Length: 339
Image 1 (cartoon, rainbow, N blue to C red):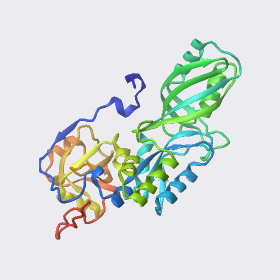
Image 2: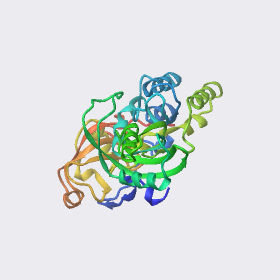
Image 3: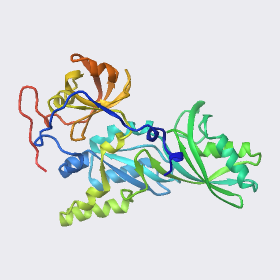
Image 4: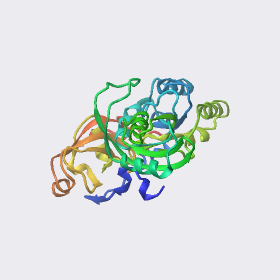
């Protein structure tokens, strides 16, 4: 994808500054891709290709049934007739889907114009709508019909044929493309409506080799149960850390992990390196050196203040993901789990 068609977080590269250095102990925790299978599934997400017909909730429920889980959750509702990327979080990882709300989404839309309009005119109007817009959700929607502001990050006209226009749109979560088509039709003075829609991206969940159908997932679990081969299943499940790639992060010492897992605040002394641009009261992801998500947190200090101080609490956890006991407790040994 060219620079012109990047979601906002992609145009700001991650830059880290080091506060301290310390090796990680390989006997505690796991690199996300090397977790034992049961734990890997509980900390996983499926990049699902939603078919037309069922609701997003029904699709997530089918995933739950196929994998034999107690719960699943999805990262952004798609209308029943809309297809495409539907990230489904598995088991305890359902708590991570809120991270996707701030990343932005991309759609491919087929719009039907009520009259034939020159291609250049359509492109010019799309450019006008590449901005912050006021939207009121349509009558058939899952949210209250209150006026709200949403941002269109980019648009790209792909093809025009007769009265059909195919375009790509990158937008803020919660944008109604059906309403966008209606507004474009009003601006063109001809009227328009959405004919078909496919979500092509949610944050780092894309139409790549991890994208799978319900049938793919069913085949993978069948192969595992009958042949004890988990390689295909692991290929279709991504670690939950994929959902926070766009978040600002603080990486911590092994000795600080279990305290966070018990709900304690993150002490400045526990920080090894962190994002260069963290501000006070900003949401952050607290990570181990192995790349495991420990918790979502609220930063109580900016990056510069964390680097200057040696004492005090710099972040408080708001949602904990790390299981207790995987890393050393402050007064007892951690459990060592082998893959």
